[in-house]
Length: 369
Image 1 (cartoon, rainbow, N blue to C red):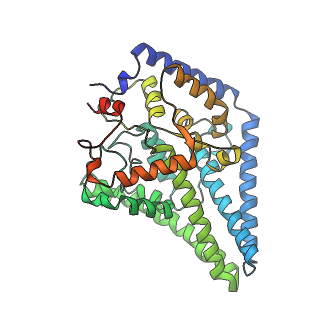
Image 2: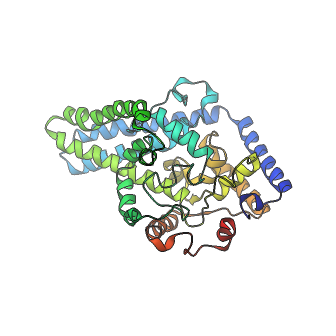
């Protein structure tokens, strides 16, 4: 079988792994006050935007104030989710010993409980990245995102499900931990979900109470406008997070893998899988910050516990290493990556996209042989 292990010789895999290990260690050895100052500045900015957004909604009767308030609150929620919450909960700042930056203590401004997310994302997704039937982020339990997923008439709704997931992304991430598709298949019982469900209800209740009850009521007669403003900010954050995450995982050239070809993989082979199974999004410094530097998804999958602000400075080196070993380094602007993802979602809704009839690239055909 020609598969993941055949991309490089055993000796090349070993050398490849050593080079990436050395790159990682160099960054770890260089971590210091500049990284702490950076994340504190982002947190300060996020809090300032949230306070400004909430305050402006008290003047929501004036349309420019309402729009500015929604804009500020949207940015605050995006920063909290992407550059702060996601990265802190990955343990990127655990080395600081700062309780406020502890991956185990941090809780973010979304309905998905941090504890549940750390298991489904940090452990399952980052351990089994793009391994079909192991990485539950491949399709999120509701979408067909790979030809290895057997087609069923249900998947005709792929574009509809994707649209709903984008609109309600924080809720999709929250429900992701229930593993409903595994309950349906009999691989998990509802009783197994009781502890998870308790955390979900507790966290979602707090979030809904804050955004849709407490803050609207505080603005008195402007409560409907504040309610709408908070809902719009959450919608903006949902659409942005969906776009960034899907563009980093599901453009056309990104590959997936089987359990068999990834069994007993070495550290170098694990690195190789992360590169083949990820894609970057090109853009400027502000774009990278607002994406939580997940626009550098390749670097993130290689080094998920390194502060994300370091990804832009090592991206060139990672790309050079890929070129040295003849490996692809998938990257492109947001519009290109998003269009590629949209086409894949539509194509995989149809039965002719099944493995037996789909037109795939030669490398993919060899891997599936």
